[in-house]
Length: 476
Image (cartoon, rainbow, N blue to C red):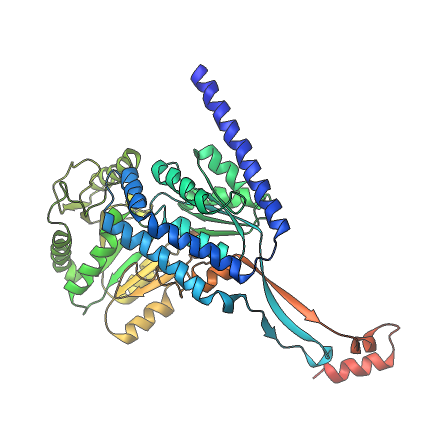
């Protein structure tokens, strides 16, 4: 009982602090609602220097949270794209901030029109555990470039990274500019209920529904990045070594714990056996062994490992053929496996897998492959492997997904000049680069008139003169 009381007291203290942090940011925004470009560049420069200086500490903290996270994967998948995103925003910031001129209709002259890009205010970002640095810094960069205050809620599954980021960001930003919020699920739910000016959530579709419902109470606009079952299509004539190697990279990075990892592969039915062998060679080439291999990332925690093992048990009990590529039972260094003879009754064909399990689905022709994908919820990413340009265009025209890679996986995500976002069950809204700046800005239309007022011609009392004017200007 005393332990329960202590937990409740601590939780209440965290909730009170959350409210204080939010109010402090609101008040700070009210004092400085339109930071100049120089101030925003200074914020970005401070963030870039911090990430560069503390690179090793960040690598160590993330690896501690995972049990083992490849240092090179953290560099490639988190630090490098974070730094590139900062550089891109800084390079283009002045142009993004510049008001855009718009046309004024003849009937409303003389006047001028423009769109100005105004900070929204206080932005909330809910960060998942799988890429705790990149998926915190990416939205943070867009929100700071747009001139906002930012609150980051880090996942309870990455406590070491959360504590480190709280300490580091607190070193270069006042809490009323950028702050990190820690805590369990109850704090996360309270966070989503705050009346933010924008809320960005990255995570599971099931949780995204709760976040959107909470935000709706305040009419808070949301950006949701939700993942889903991203398919890869292997064409009839692509060299299998090319396809297998690139799919294997996308699926084994971070042990498959990536929202845009290939979730299943559609392979021509007469090429399945050859693809299995090509894929096996590719994966074993990347990771000759798992034991003490610093390149192979662990499953984040026992709960996720139990979930993945449950998928395997469910699938094999319903007729799936398991093809393990490594020895099994290596604790959280879960061995990569392929699965054949899968069907829609299996849990791993219904839920996002988020781990090193890859189902293979045979198909007879592209029409059948497209139909298979289009019957299912729209995915966050889609991958096609084939060099026929007409077939590539068919993929773009006849399927729907948040993003596409032709003859690669994952690498559309770190392209800062491409929008990143889902569609339907895989999310809504976009960020990265210019789209991120726009997401975290209010594009405010401004019409300007000076002393002469031609609009007096349409003021009442109305009569024949206004009817003649309407006929002349509007009726065709």
